Length: 114
Length: 111
Image 1 (cartoon, rainbow over the protein chains, first blue to last red):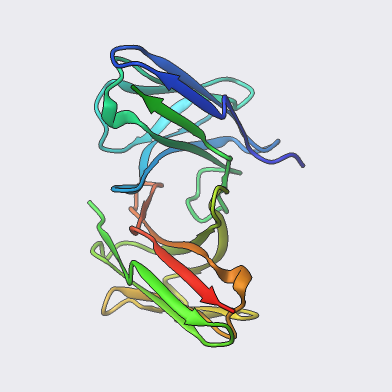
Image 2: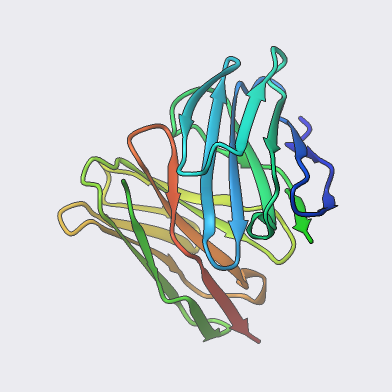
């Protein structure tokens, strides 16, 4: 099976702009989670989608949003970008709802906000 | 919410030595504790996990121990090799189908 894929791999934006990142899970996986990785804060949970519904959300402002489509592909959107949003955004997919299902990460999208 | 602390932040060992990374968590309801390895420029990959009904789990040179009473768990790597050099993250489930990660340990194995 193909692994988790993310597009684009790199993005450069300026403050105030918005950005949309895409994640395609492993075939058959219906749960997609998003994480922000920064050197200072480590890996932080953004949100999780299962069957097109957001099931869980981390402590991020409302500028961060997401959605999931019927084919389990997911997108996340960040509006009104700030310098502090520069990070590696990782998505991870797993088969179903249980957190004990193995999570497989994508390669990430590196976002730079200037 | 769940808080996971990980130590040390960096660890340097000689090839063939053992390495131990420790994590503590705050939520006594946590039941699932995975460990991820992230090589430079690559995605995190699950290397081992343990559930709360088990005290120890081994997979070849890697083992994880869990002490639920003390709320800490540890990763043990024996006979380290240069390819073990990476950043290792521990995590704990929050009880809400999400994972809280530790801050990571950069392991360097000197040949």
